[in-house]
Length: 109
Image 1 (spheres, rainbow, N blue to C red):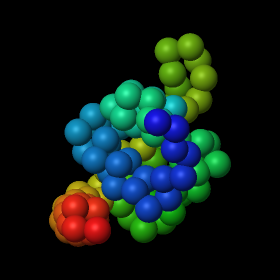
Image 2 (image 1 turned 45 degrees about the vertical axis):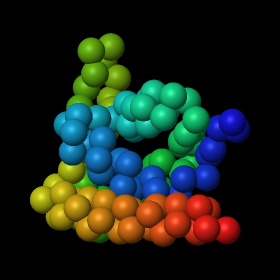
Image 3 (image 1 turned 180 degrees about the horizontal axis):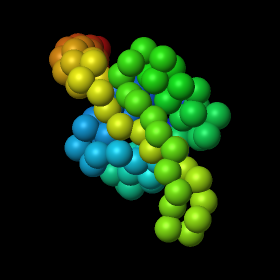
């Protein structure tokens, strides 16, 4: 199966879910979680991740802060907000409806 790098529609819900479960993470940590949890089927490119994080921050779903890492580098940590948790709930409901509908079409076609 080919690795996918076009996750635009599902990327925000995956990011919110990971931040909601794992707590604050930097961009690389979010990417690593998605790739690891998908057994490397899903790949998130920086060119997709950081614009999505920016849009999510503008929407109030996540907040970011600068920290200094153990190796003295600056990194931006992202964490989910209350509005992000509400959005995640809404998106999970929508996702379940869509995947069930796609499953029905595939089964009946």
